[in-house]
Length: 436
Image 1: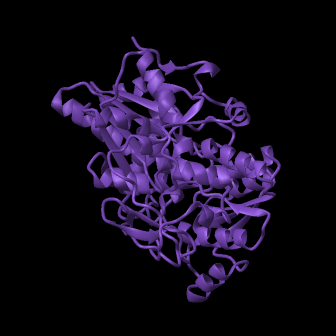
Image 2 (image 1 turned 90 degrees about the vertical axis):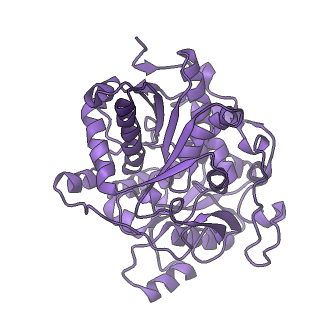
């Protein structure tokens, strides 16, 4: 019998991040300057990001070394465990083997710390004193707040208003680590004031919060902006998840048949899945499923085109699957998935047919999360609950087919600061349909 939990020692923490751009048979469409629409140069990004991150953003080098100080910080919780969900399997009576990579065991409670730490580190190296950012449900804001505390940087977080109201404990966590958390849209930026003038009751969006954070960063020479998903260097940092998972599965002789992850901007799915893409390109049959909410279906209903990553049009134009920068999603509890666009790398892989996508209604996501909590004990973040729904569906399909298959998903964070959402679900107060 396989172990319930597959643990590796600190020596198994990857020493390099994996860059998928080195192995893709197609070029990634270049980012464009927001004003001139010419191909973006490294100098165009210098106002927002440190030189090291700009180099990573544009690199085609297969492996990029992780600095010692970042590795030391990773040792706070990495490598993370890979679990075999035996109790869930038994409750479903499925021949499928279900594995989950648990990224919620670090102090911030989600996978976001994997990129927050190197982003804070590289900014500090360049002499930056302050970082601004946005956050949806608060996982990214929490992670960057902690990283800035560890690397002695000031941090200001624009939190999407609906999540700011729904998830007060995330705000408290950020403030405990020394950050300032501001509901977005706010009166502190022109982008925020414009949005409030148009709709004083707006719930806010990630695109708008990005605009506010960038506007503030551009106003000061000692300040940079940090993004929690979408960009190449963010996905790069998250590949520690998949690299560890490959080693853990290899230790028990398993190659996954199905890889599942939720997608908002795409970073946690990419972190697990990208290190397995070379095997798929070489002919191995691996089904890779991106799971998004029906309320924000950028892959399943969006258009693959150039669009801004923010509402005000301050960011470079990215070729991505998008619902449009002005899209305002419904008020779903999975705030980390309420984003109009998708990472260019994920978008390209989906466009080329390497990835599949499914859209899940939030009541069905919470149903899966409760099944998981009652069998495996962990209360998942609402975002991860979407991936769980599809993983369970895949396991039931295996039962119908009478086939065994290995399914792995990224449980990207815990839901212990999202209990108000679970309370609403258990009381029957979450709508059965909430489409875009």
